[in-house]
Image (cartoon, rainbow, N blue to C red; front, side, top):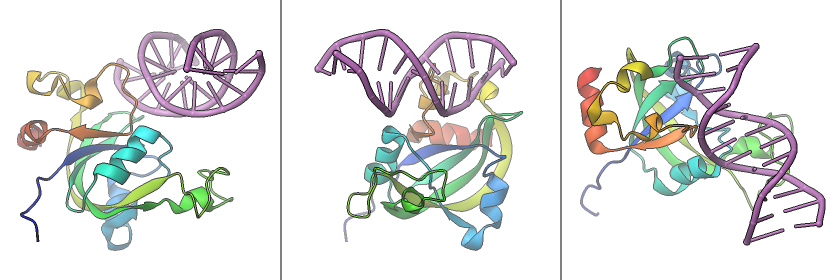
Length: 157
DNA sequence: GCCAACGTTGGC
DNA sequence: GCCAACGTTGGC
């Protein structure tokens, strides 16, 4: 066994009217496949860089008070996203096949709900000014979080 | 391989 | 609802 690997940290956006932190807390085993990501950069983060045990800031977007609302962790490493093969799904991708899947997802497990830390507050801290989330025009639904950013945010929660 | 047109994201 | 910023598509 290798020595314990350095943990990575992530921020994952979800629209609460589609899938909220409470939904995650109440689903089976508090674990859910993070399916439906259809952006290559976000896919690559999941497929190539996420490991079991990585910690996640759960973020609510497109809502009254967008911000960090809880913590989660990676429960299963990436595997082909089942929704790409399902013609009934809004995430169906006709260009994907079982032999050549295009989209991957990890499983995400609920850790805890926190107070809401709004994006407007995050923008106030110099320590967070380099956060990918806060970069102008950043629309990525999955972004890396540095260890320092993670630790700073833990103190705010 | 370029790039205009188009669609989407997401804070405000 | 607006719209800036970005990613994707497809004609050439």
